Amino acid sequence: MKKIVYVRYLPLTKKVVDDFLLNKIAENGFCVEYWDITTIYFKNESMLEHYNTTELDRFKIHRFDSMSDIRLAVKNNRDALYVIVMSFEWRIVPLFRLLTKYDCKISCFAFRMLPWPIFHSNFFNTLKVKFKDIINLIENRIFLPVVVKIGYIKMYDYLFTGGTEGWRGAGRVKKSYLKNTKFFYLNNFDYDNFIGLEDNYDSEGEIVFIDEYYPFHPDSLLFSNNKKMSPNVYYNQLNNVFDFLERKYNKNVIIAAHPKALKYKEKNFFKGRTVVYNSTLSAIKHSSLVLAHDS
View 1: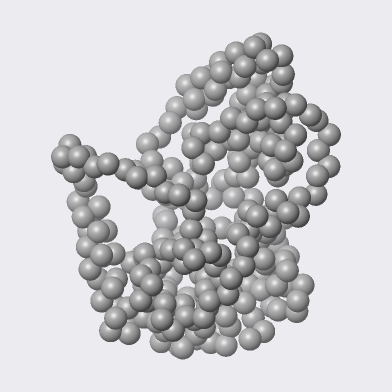
View 2: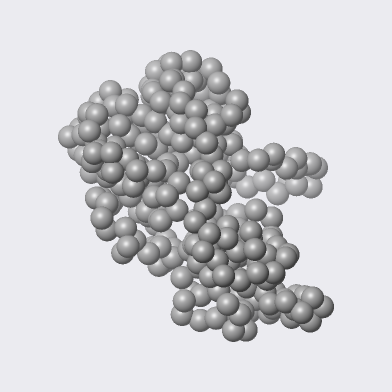
């Protein structure tokens, strides 16, 4: 294999380039392509303004608007290794069917998140279930295992994972699905980023807020279960907390911006406080206090 094709239903970002080793793979002589299938899965084009791909134009980025276009591309690239940068679930079955039909090699990176919270359901929560949630449940719990079992779609040929439970990070996958999958164990990318930290941060003892970009995060445009949040209310409340902490501890609050927070480059939502990009690890290392939401 001389070509590695990454497939994802979101535009390419620097974090994807770093976490999934696109640079390193290209440096080792492979042709690396990124297939952006966003518009096939999500029709809300306003979300695209949150992605800046101009600095990533060194990679061959192909954008697809229909499954027929992908079918032709897969047919012409049967010998490539496909890296699926999406959770395995019913929505991507048509893509897996194409890769199965042309006997392509399929892989993914699977790192399960740290301990998941346990949510206790009750009768009233059950009443709130929407019709599309029921359809989603049927598709993933009933139909998905069937199409795997009968061989309508093949599963991953290679899984790049970490730890004994990392494979669960691939999505709605049972261990029985992976009986023919070859496992390669490697570090979680967060660990590698920590070990390889180039620390040139020049401030000490600050209070660091790990920004989640909640009011403008593109996920809220993709997933209807995310309620829209008022930017004015959200940032006013944050700044009230920051004001209090700065008075109490006599230290400055700096904002470790979310990578997609492009609006912060147009306007300072934090009453003039310092906003830094791509420096979260260093900022945390040198901080006296870290503030986070839930991530």
